[in-house]
Image (cartoon, rainbow over all chains, first blue to last red; front, side, top):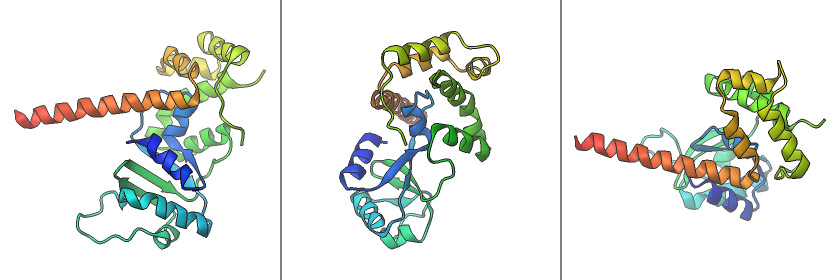
Length: 137
Length: 77
């Protein structure tokens, strides 16, 4: 996963997005290692075109998709789905159009809790500890 | 949404102090009891957000490298 190159490339391409998930937690100080990049992106038509164009050189395909099965990567594909779990030349990338909890760190932590997945629940004590330590007086 | 900036000066000192000496019954204490190594968190919060990500990226790459070597060895046996 070359997350830095991927994020830089999306930014340079004018894509409107926010980093969420494990990498967002790392930006806040989490020590959990993650292998994929999760981003939430704007559904604006122009942004869909930019995102499709930006990722095209890195050959995105749905993870687990059978080899040889045709897959068209374009803005229409992006418009037709709200969650795409992709493999690319730069690593695995999850594109989410809608995520509850985007906004504040507190809301993101609440979203992890409400998701209820074991992998999310394992991160909660660390995230809540970091949140408490970072609170203003 | 506020920009995520490096912690410096009094802000950093306050966060480190709260991690080192958690308040009783608080979330930091709960994290410690859960098994979170707070000393690692302290090292992370001392870095800028970008450097936190670069450090974890480096660790992920190292883990991937070791896993690749282990898989290769297993297939050679």
